[in-house]
Length: 242
Image (cartoon, rainbow, N blue to C red):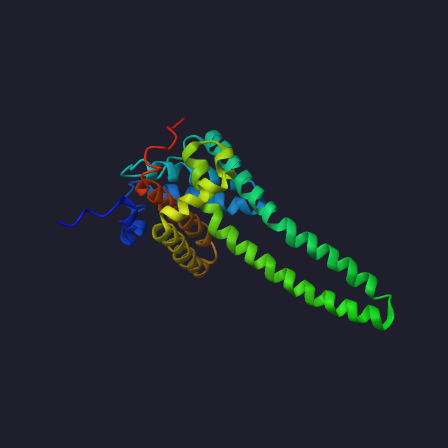
């Protein structure tokens, strides 16, 4: 008799990903409030609240709660959770951009200096300009790597409830290695939802913000399901402090 599939082999449920939100009796209110904070994120005010909601939704899904959408009744706690999540993201962003920005700055100095140097300077300037193209390509690759890596880093932060857990690269990479199919499927689900959220433009742009928040909830659900299926991470979700 064939052995049952391991937890990692159980694929994420596409239907559940797009259904779990509307299964909550208060989903309209919760998504609309999230949309308001997503709008406020444009001026940074709402970003910590959206980040905090993301953190708690991942935890709820990882614990297997049937209706994982958190309430909006602890704004102070959401704000603090979100600040830490933003710190994790921004620290990774800065680290990824140090090399491209340094190289770009040096090349700009070379280009500026070569403009005063006659024919030889023109050659050097041309080579430096090509170098700038290469720097943009490197920056693009670093951003792609960031997009693939940071969700796993955030997942470790969320589950262990400590910022340092997001800066343990071996353990972060191990999450992706153990769950490659479901991890990348979670990212695909987010991309699909994010693309669909652009349809909110037809609602005089107002619908973009609730739908954008909804797409973030899809990503949180996907990461929580990855954790729930991973035997190493099962049971590690930090207990609620609210």
